[in-house]
Every structure is written in C-alpha cells, then in structure tokens.
Image 1 (cartoon, rainbow, N blue to C red):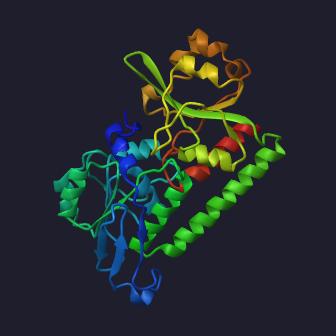
Image 2 (image 1 turned 180 degrees about the vertical axis):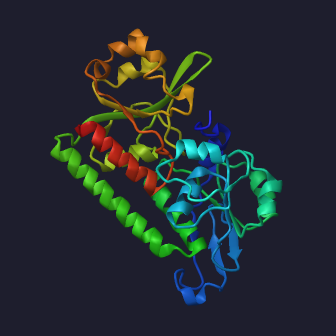
Image 3 (image 1 turned 180 degrees about the horizontal axis):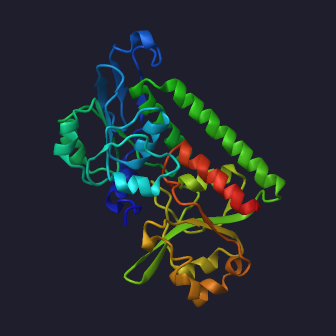
Length: 325
C-alpha cells in the first residue's frame, strides 16, 4: 500500500540522534547575494555546500516535497508522483515533476538525468541509496520524524530546506500561520465544550482479509497537533520512537473507551478504509460505545498524516468541522 511507511527505514530513523541544523552565507533572502555559496549541515552531520539557492530540487519523500511546494519551489523530481497526488491533495503539486521511482528505491538514472542542484532525502531512505545519490548531486538528508518532538522536527526540517532554497521568510510566514491555525482550532473546540475530550485517531487497512489498525499516539505528528488543540489522546498503546505509530486490531479498540474517533482513508486505495468497509458488520466494532453513539468521523481524503504545516492545517480544519458539526 502506498501510504504505509517503510518499516525497515523507520527502525533506522530511531538510531539517528543528530538534529538538523544549518547556516547560510549570506542572509538567505537577500536577493543581491543569491549567487553566493550556502553551507548547511544535515541530520547525519554531513556538510552540504551549494553554489547558491537550490532551484532544481528532487524530493525522495512526500514530506520534503510538501515543504518545497509550500516554500514556493516546484520540485523537478518526486518519488511516486501518482501516490503523492492521491494521498496529498492538501498541498498539491503545481507542476508536473518527473517520477523518480518509489519512495524507498529511487531510480538513480532518472535522478541523474534531471541534473538537480539538490536532492532532498530523509532518514527513511536506505543509507546505500543516499550514498549513491550523493554521487549525483548534493544531498540534504533530514530526520524523517521524531516522536519526542513531532512538531519541532517538522518545523526544523522546513527551516533547513528553506535555508537551502533561500526561502526563510516564507518559512517564517508558514510557521506563524500554522500557530494561528492551532490557536483558532483550540478556541473552536473549547467553545464547543470539547476541551479535554478523549479522542483517538487511527488509520487502518485490510491485507489478506485481515484488518490492521494503526493508532496515532501522542508521539505522532497528528497526536501532537491533537494535544495542541486541547484534546486528550485516548490511545494507551506504545508508538514507535520515530513516528509515534502503534499497532492494534479491532479487539484493541475496546480498551480506549467512550471517545471521539476519527480516521483518514482514501477512495484511491480500496484497502485503506476498513472502518466503513469490512468492519461495518463486525460484532466487536459495532458494539463499541463510540460506534453506537455515532462518534466515528471519516476526515477528508488528501491530508498527508506525515506532512508539513499545510497538511496539518488542513487536518485541524477538517477535525474541528467534524467534531463541532
């Protein structure tokens, strides 16, 4: 399934402890000095030098692609373009980038043919692939996720990419807009007397007629946003150290009690919506208190659950609309 994270790569993410940081020479948005070199340090501690602001950029993962688009930089190459268009309509592509292959295995030949100024990769990409990409063009590798500070990781990655593309003013604007959206959403939920409400977000899928449910714990990006909105995360399962994602089945849902429950599926992926599909006739599912009360909310397609400020702002809007209707 396209939306499933690369589990092997996620394990690799947990081993990374270096935080992405960067400096630019000179001030990033000074148009008079855009030809001067930019020096950055990525999440692996690798020094990355650019002749100037990156214009022709390739993105190997959808979160960095989303950052680029929001910063006003149209990527020339994107992994699994069709998948991005299916799962991330909150921040749509504005151009027609070259499809460079899968998110876990980009085509080196295709990337090389694009002659990029910069390749954006994440710690989800196998080190061997990153090593090959570095032979093609400068690679800026960011830490894909961090359950210890999901929102902080998202904004630090945004800032680093902004420095590489000399769009720091835009990054500052995006962060302010996102903070305002969180405040707006929190107030709307409080006004609806939902402050502190127990809430559980998940996605699910069906493989070989078996239903798997993926809880988004407090360590997930969506989980962190939920808490900023004043909601209480009802999940008690443990999430992974990178994405804060857990694993359970239908029986596991009996442990979260009487909650507001929400999920995101996708009409473009038939296996992605067991809640309105195979579970509709499941006795355990139909016996759950939140199902009986009608407190199950399918949020709109196209919000990438691991994206940037754009997807998270769209998530806030859709969640508030669902809970306050």
